Image 1 (cartoon, rainbow, N blue to C red):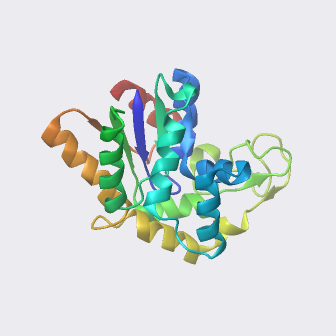
Image 2 (cartoon, rainbow, N blue to C red; image 1 turned 90 degrees about the horizontal axis):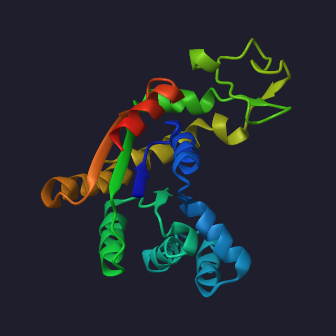
Amino acid sequence: MNILFFGPNGSGKGTQGAILKDKYNTPHIESGAIFRDNISKGTELGTKAKEYIDKGDLVPDEITIPMILDRLKQDDCKKGWLLDGFPRNKNQAIKLDESLKKADMGLDIVVEILLDREIAKNRIMGRRLCVNDNNHPNNIFIDAIKPDGDKCRVCGAELKTRADDQDEDAINKRHDIYYDDNTGTLASAYYFKDLAEKEGKVKYITLDGAPGVKDVTDDLISKL
């Protein structure tokens, strides 16, 4: 299965992607990781991308999309892939769709996790990191994993916060881009939703991101 994944920061998209990766032995391809890999290896595309990044500019789609396609053509993706973090706007969605079709790489499923914007922000700002193990889930706004005061609910160790998790302005800026259904990330998701309705070749799945991780996973697996 070739899967495209959408969801706002705080929706648990990364968690669900990791679960699918393990369950179906499918590579979870994150756009940021593709940039870092190409830059560290000094590839031609990575070198070009670094020039824009170093200047604080956005990397043009003409560089980003070929980089993504190159990753999706690698051997570990032959039986399927899960792409996360791209496209981020409608224009990128159109170009990605055209590029996948040109490369004869079919897109099978698009997953969109639905989550109220305020809940998504609270989940980000409510994250707490265990000093012993960052994988111990603690969040002051999620009852199922709410810590015991300022102690880790798993091991009792001290908890800390990530600075970017507490930067409300930065969170709002990211969510402004995601929840924009005219030109932003939701617009790109809806582009594929329209394709699914018109062409019938792509399956479009929506998930309620409000319940706990297991409930969302069960819903996702049942719909794949």
